[in-house]
Length: 490
Image (cartoon, rainbow, N blue to C red; front, side):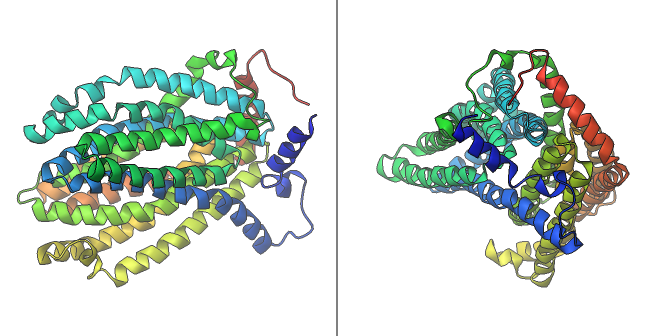
């Protein structure tokens, strides 16, 4: 084996499985094990937090620059990004998350060459999907009018949506590359490329708006460039020899087994989208209330705080998904179980800290965003619900990451459908409109009826899980996905 492949193989093995694969180590104290597992999780979660914050900040910066052009431009751009591009991002992210299962298990099982094949299959599936849902961008104006947007906002949002099409196609390549690198712990490059794209995005947005005065189209085009910078940055890192074990060039195997791959991708997409859309329902139902302006502003403030805090649990979703997939792929169910316990515990401690901050400063939170006394009082009323949401978010996303790492996407999609839309939405509507509890009732129904129910079910499923059987299933899945023309490795 060439020296570069040997060093890469050694690098691949170091941070992952040695504590479990090689048997019990000399120091088997629980605290030492927790510390070791925590380092592995933070090795993934740290760059993931930065990546998520950077990507979210790019979207916020786009809206901030457009906001200097006028209220109409800001409203139209926000509608195009949050509704049209938001749906697309949720779908692409969800479908590509199938790679968290497959690439993670293949890497843990040392089937390194299959990672590149899986990524190429995901490219094919997501590109086809991108073409199929292209009308979602082309006909954004009538879609937004259907959802109740004023015609003048919907017209401009339709123009913005057409300008977002390059970003739409970038997602088809960006997310598979992201999960491909993440599953083999290439986390530093993810963070550095995200930083580069963020810096370029700020500079280009300023340049096109203030120097060239290109308006909304110019700012959106700057965003397109930034997303493609990340695509080419990731791809360049891969093909320039930094992944010698997992990338051996383009392969015709990418076109085999597409139906089975598409099935898993679709289940992953449904699972993520059901969660993503559920978060938007609070805003939608709140907008239906009489005199909804103040409640909408208060909910927007609470949602912004929640999103920023959510970056930590979502990072642990990523980290535990990789860790569980790696351990199951290596046939080590105990390692997967231990990674799950440590990830949930760590995320809960972090979210408890943020919950405490919210409760202590509940009367002052809104001053960061508004000086309107009515809005401040409404945020104060909603703070207990925000705090409880933060606590639930410490567990629910992490357990979703366990589901992704274990390949349970189809079952979790059913759980999400039943708990969110069978229980949460009806209960939220009942409390908010029938019992006239307004926005507090809507939010309480969605949280206690949907998110809490889903979290309890996932906890029960995880506790009852036979991890050794899951490890056996992962090994069987690996052999199935490799196909009949299985390639042997040295």
